[in-house]
Length: 378
Image 1 (cartoon, helix red, strand yellow):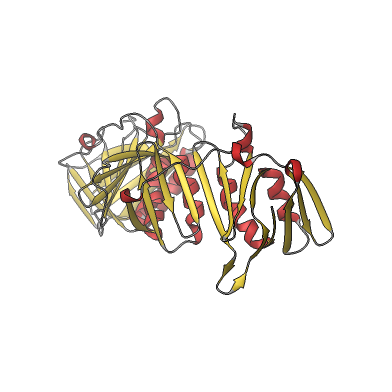
Image 2 (tube, one colour; image 1 turned 90 degrees about the vertical axis):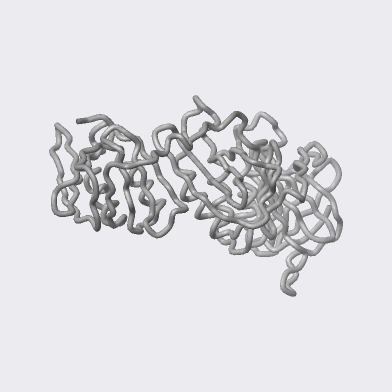
């Protein structure tokens, strides 16, 4: 195997596939990156058995030659070392040559690195995903869906299925739900040509966070294909596979209240900033609790106190206040994350009592729903 490649393009590809490589893997070959060279270009693959990322660098793009292939072939090189070497090479021209016994020469300018590679045939094959279960979603929309839900997944492994986001297909709607049993985030999206034979999968939150980083510069639609064990996200030059979480996701629909006793319409940004200020004192207290109380004259009071430090009270005008008066306490962190997901728009908060879950939604858009369980302090 022998080829020349532009260092900046090789580094961009490595940046993507390195997101899947873990030093903690129990499968030694997965500490490496697989390089496949064909006459069309170079495929780079990284995996930790849960996530697999493959990126493709074509021989030429927009009339510019990126790769010159002298001899095709495959090799697995130690990922961290190869990435560091490429990052520090002195010129943008890189030559990689593999000779007998997987001995690999990486040359750039006057630098020669000799690495010992591994047999590419030992590297796990990519999962098979059939093309008939695919649907497309604009990259910007996919990034929004991830941002609006993934923060609410559970971080503890006591119920592994809750560390993922449940993607459910119902008719022409994709419903994404995350919950850690103290709060819930739900995002509904109408899409065309959704598959009919897959109703629900649970995608690990970790996978979605890594996917989001890869989608940072992407604007084109992302193709998504689901099987019983895997989900594939496909952009122009990246394949992102993730295993799915096993187990039944809880039925969260019954958590969402049907009727409300107090409705508050408020500017999301000003509420977020007030809770942020109140949480300065709440943070010193172990559980970071902020109180919310409705007052007369369309006003609410946000307050927090820490016995050792002091207290803070702030009154904010609301746009509308209907129903019973209310005092409720909640986690400042959960409330701030929910408000950030709604993205500073005007928010309708619906309460069913001081100890019952309450709902936040944007008044402009019913697609996003956030639910939070209060904290008992009164």
